[in-house]
Amino acid sequence: MKKADSDAMRPERDFSGGVRGKYLPRLAKGANVVVLDRDIAKVFPTSKAVNDALRVLAEAGRRHSKAKISTRGA
Image (cartoon, rainbow, N blue to C red):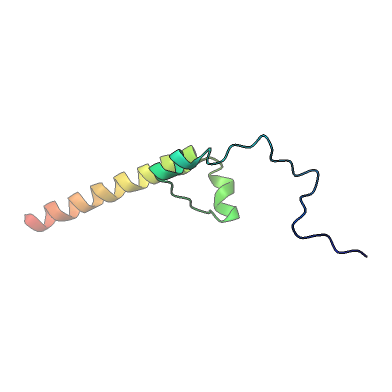
């Protein structure tokens, strides 16, 4: 079996129509990538579903914190 030349590009990998840095401006604005476990990804299949659930949880946490503070002050 012949070893392939490590510098040679396979014919099916044609990047001649590619644009260098196409997504760089979007990445520069900031991106947070979170990898979900498979069981969680089945429950939350889209970014919107994850964000909606986290917003509900965050609001519940804020309400809980406010309730704790108001009972301590009484």
